[in-house]
Image (cartoon, rainbow, N blue to C red; front, side, top):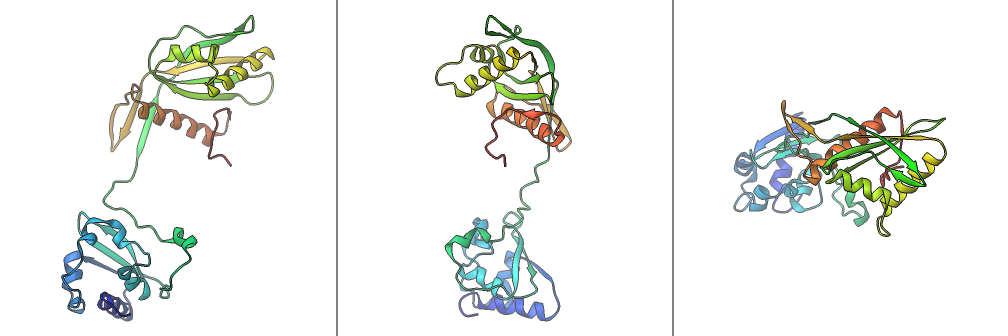
Length: 257
């Protein structure tokens, strides 16, 4: 392995020869190794600032460890440490087809805590949605931010649900009663509700105007006045419904198979 990072390759080859399966070093230790004396000026600033410098790709420093049969298992820019792990055989250092770029191994980000979040919503019964003279009639609703769930029960088959979020519950119900020409989702739900009720089915409405979020053992209010908070709660409800698989879901899911 020629080039600036050849001493790193030699060090890792030697480590493999001694049966080592992993090597963890501080950035300072890496730069101060006797075998790395040829690294002019030590590690470059990008090694301390950009995680991508340590990716298992095809840049010169990356082929140095990949060509020796090693890869970076994790790197901490905050702690300035890197761990290499050995593969059964050296990885190829030939240039890949650009279409294969997505195959680059991703590193574990140990500087960022794992996402561990619990969302809790208490549903309250708002009432039944009815059909009168061909028009939808919703129960009386407050003009507040909320998560809502429409449950469509028919004479046969599984219940169907639609889950949504809004910054004004009363206005959202109005959109479903009289959808505007550009409100495609409201029009779709309006037509579905009318069709379902006209066929003898029932529609019940539940709402959650308050929510909590728990992370790291600490619980706090989830402010539903914020769009991101409402979307988090809405998607948590939908995710649970997908897992439970007890109802059919009317929400359009672009990721559905």
